[in-house]
Length: 78
Image 1 (cartoon, one colour):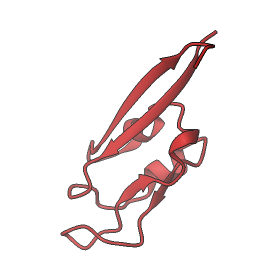
Image 2 (tube, helix red, strand yellow):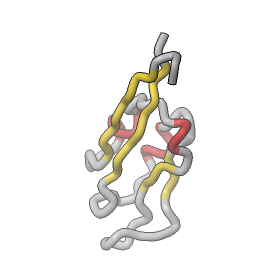
Image 3 (spheres, one colour):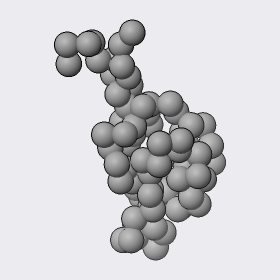
Image 4 (cartoon, helix red, strand yellow):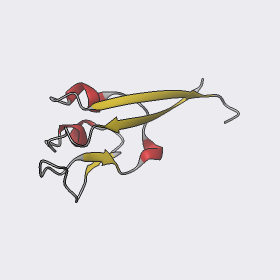
């Protein structure tokens, strides 16, 4: 069976830092940044990108739909 590698892109300027994605992430990939966006919110970002499986939980719970999830199937040779 192929392993799945995931990645997320967060629209930093639209993220309001609610933290729902942080709680929803089963692999604890997402954290809130110490820095802030243009609106003064601590935005979400990938703290542990290698652990992302592309499960889409973060995107599903995001109330502002600012998270895009990408998935890549890796063959056993990768």
